[in-house]
Image (cartoon, rainbow, N blue to C red; front, side, top):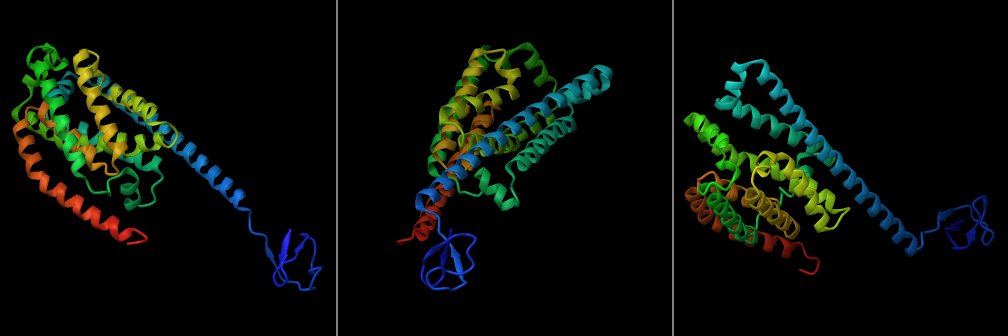
Length: 306
């Protein structure tokens, strides 16, 4: 059906002139509000299903890429003892490992996020939003979890207390040890959070509730930390507590930086850089308070009735 542009009478689709006034100008009949709402609901459901499938595909691709990378290193190490020695202790090997994993994480997340620009990618992963004092406060919870994990280590109850783990860290050169602490505290938490809480959590969250989404993220994180959690239930408890904490932070805040600061704080403590961590937390407080002030002004200016 179509409407006459002048008298408003409804006419059949095959009519060339209005039966009421004889004009040949017509316009489309606007959709019924209920029909418009149904189309919107269908579009949202399709978007949620698409995001969920993208998250499954991305998670599988990340796991597969990590598996293939580790198998390749294992094969080359068995074929060449010199490479095995270099890979286990040289700072360049640690840098190559971190750079490879970071590149794979970011490239795959970018691809499956369907971001058209850097700004779109940062917005979708929560990197474009300012951190909040709420995130700063929960980072202290991460610090507490880190100190509990250190207690397990010092009393021989953690996976890091195993002789093989101690031998590995003892065999590292000073440069490799410092570089390992640097990447573990500042670099690794950044790209891990972009992948897990920045993309996977938010994408899964469109299809599932917070509990199921958190469980999926825990399973994904467990694979990448299997060497630690498979040897000590206490280490598992510490890491699972941290992962649940950052999932809660992501659920309650829009900024991924809140998750990053929690992850950084935990890694700094377990790397025995807790003095630097505590000092950094205190120094960072004014920035978090300023971010809250700027965010409040921005949201107030953006209100329709402001």
